[in-house]
Length: 438
Ligand code: GLY
Ligand code: MN
Ligand code: MN
Image 1 (cartoon, helix red, strand yellow):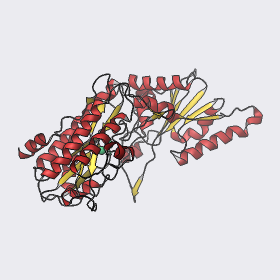
Image 2: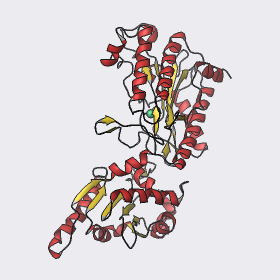
Image 3: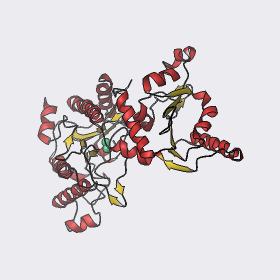
Image 4: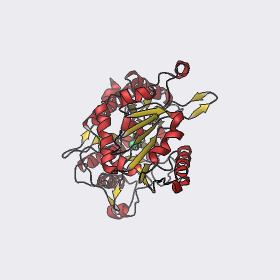
């Protein structure tokens, strides 16, 4: 069961329905089950939209919302109770549980959806639906609409407008409630503990996957049963591969290791990166680049507050990183010109962050009407500047090559300074060296 109350789910549905208006219908299918190989499935992860609105974790389910419907605004379709199947795959809520525990006004076995859903669609003006996300469901929905159209001469009235449910729902998901923030802070704490553990055990000669195992241990032990994304553990030049997940190389004395890992707790992601020396001591070259990334992150924090726009933190990191690389001689030229012409991109090729929530790269628009959107209290984002010097970059001194550094934390936008949720893992050079020496 979700740690969110049924009241919170009900509030979320009400807000969505207010935005939809009357005489509309929203249809949200569950995520599909993905086959791993003969007879086995990937661990099931519910669709984030359905999860946000219901807390319902089972596959083969569909949520239907019909604002203003007198006989009940929420209908669910789900797997029927079946003791012989439950023996194999576990407990099911069944339609009765969907009503009693998840707030549905009516609920039906998923096998009855073809008979019932066309009747619910009939006479509604607009259908709110995420077209293109689930091909087989798209086809099913078109079949139901066509069924109604075929009865038009008998007076049936098919809906005549499709609206992307994402547009309204994802604006709601973008602003995190106090309870969501609480869960995200917990996910941040568990993930921070996992990074601390990795720093504490790291030794030259270990394999990258051994550190991955330490992270997973800390996640699962604390009730976060899965990482929010594949953990990245990149030693040496592997740290320059942004989404390196092989994690199968030896960690060498003298190299840095970059770990980008976070757990998912109760449907919410954490996303932390730390970069530290395998041996516990930074070299001078590593220190010099590390300090720039750390300063860049601090500069970003300073422009994350209500009223700043989305891209300001990124711009702040670009300025600090470009100036730092100029000073160290990795870049040459004029600061403003390098920024203007994106001369830093060989070393810093990604954005400084993304929205964070139920999805690690969470939903919500970054621009509104062509302009970067303004930050508002309750938005949650990552701040993750980096410098990556390709091992093949012959334009720079050898001592810089193959150094990859990223520092990533998760923050909540407030009216004042942003609130860092993942600060429990050290990130200054002194703090890291002290922890690793201990
Ligand atoms: N871990 C993926 C990211 O930082 O965006
Ligand atoms: Mn991230
Ligand atoms: Mn990350």
